[in-house]
Length: 76
Image (cartoon, rainbow, N blue to C red; front, top):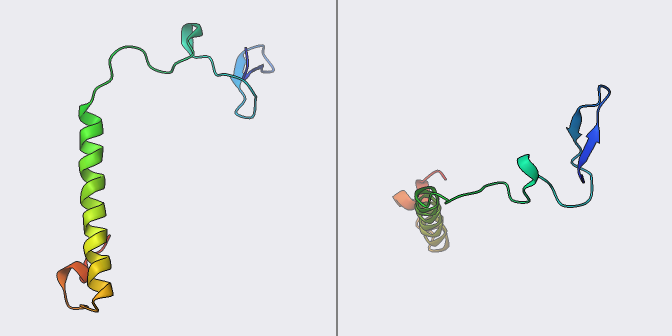
């Protein structure tokens, strides 16, 4: 199996530098099996969009030299 070496006691150990496809428990090629929960992706995308909007607002305040604006004072 690619990526697995035998340790001093004959137990398999993962080698991150090995070439080849990784094998997961039961001989699967994919790390997950079954349906994926989409709610986590939606939450991540909302957080990312909020951060990007804040960054755009701060950049706009900087470019207009509006240093007293709340957008400029925002910590990201």
